[in-house]
Amino acid sequence: MTQLLGDLAATDFDIAPLRNDRGIPLRRRGDEVCRALELALTEEPPPNVSEVARRLHYARGERLYQIDRVRSEMFAAGHREAIRALQPRPSRAPRKCERPQMKRALEEALARKFPISVPDIAAQNAYANASCIRLEFPDLCRAIGQKIAQLRKTEMNGKGEILKAALEEDPPLTAEHMAGRLGFGCPKVLRRNFPAQYQALLEKRIAYEEAQRKQLRSDLISAWAENPAPTVHAVCRRLGISTSSVDCQHGDLTRAIAARHLRERAESMERRHKLLRNEVFTIVKNLLDRGERLVQARVQKMLSADSLKARTTLGRFLNQATRNLMIPQIERLR
Image: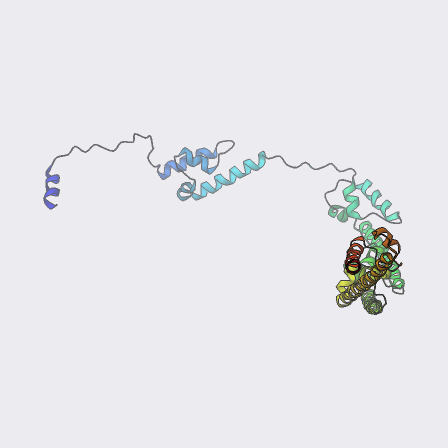
């Protein structure tokens, strides 16, 4: 390896100079960048820092800040101002009235039984807000505000009397219903303005609902002891309450009522099946003794009013009776 390097060193090479065949310019010196910035500052409108950097063949504008930060920041600020000046400014609506007209509008509002608020007056006359009106006419604006506050206080006192009278109603109202009656959007307004009456209303409503639950449970216990046992739907329809509500409050009693009704229904069906079977056997025996034909329609007419009238069950018992009663007669004939 050492010999090879020595041979290469002894050999004469023609080293060609580096060329810039791709057209990439050499890096600019600092004074050239400063002159370019000064020249760009005279342009109208001024370009941004990135545009000047591209003119000097820099990829980004950070290099200009490194060379001359003061001029670069001045240049960026000038560009922002030029862009801001080109943007359209929002047009302000012309005022509909000047100072004398505004004073007259405030005096007319104050003379009303239910005056308009100062912000509403400002909006009606194309003012952005009521600040300038309050500065020009502080006494009138203060008088309007005091009158509106007094009207609201009087109105609230009247609603307090309505709420006090509603505490005597039976059944007591819910907080949501009471808030709607007074024109409030939610019970929170009722609680904030009338805390004592609101708490009294809640306590009365809770006591009422508890009494209703106890009464409902007593009624359900009485329904469970009835004879014959009613269905849960019949009990709820009689009490005027939904089955879902009853099941949610007293699920144990609804299940007990339903179980008792099903048990009594099954026992009743069993008794009616036994009665039907006995009657069918008796009727078939009498018909055979008289030598009459065994027709299901004739047998059905001879059943008592309490017997089961299901055609399938009647046919099954009729077939059993026919087999059990006709076979001995056939054997006697033999």
